[in-house]
Image 1 (cartoon, rainbow over the protein chains, first blue to last red):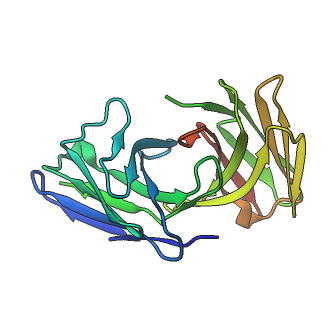
Image 2 (cartoon, each protein chain N blue to C red):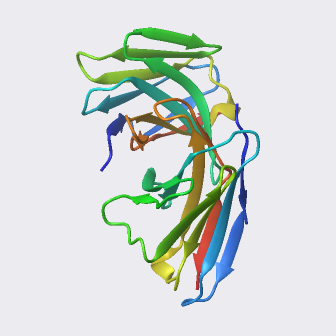
Length: 114
Length: 108
């Protein structure tokens, strides 16, 4: 299956700073990638669908100005958490794959905001 | 909102025993998928079952799908300590929505 990488794997930052997370599809040209957030001992919650060359589609309740998504190429999508606060601390996971078919997930990025 | 509800939320068994997890969903589906997540890691795809299929096998995994009841089950036979993980079902048309998950603990 497809290989997806994420960088960084973990990050600690101060409140108020911005953090960028990269998601790369290493062997698949992904016109669409997905960003999820997972709090401890909970399920994955879809945050947004990243569309190559166009604006991302955000799920209800997700602030698009706070979670900036850029999908400038077929292999790279980035999620920037702007002005991060402690409540943004979470595990962020991206995936790619065909719609309605198998999704391939990155290893995740653990964000801790102090 | 969550598409799938899974039960049990947590399951503890001994090595060699079978583990069964159930998933219920709300809307019509084209397929249903099961994923596994080791603690603090990304998700690994286990199996995809289509809406016109009733049962599917992959190694020690057996998945059933009952579209009339909007439910699916995942059976892991002859469990191993290495099967300890969280298991999620997921469905969706234009996006994948995950169930609440079952945390499986297999004791050696």
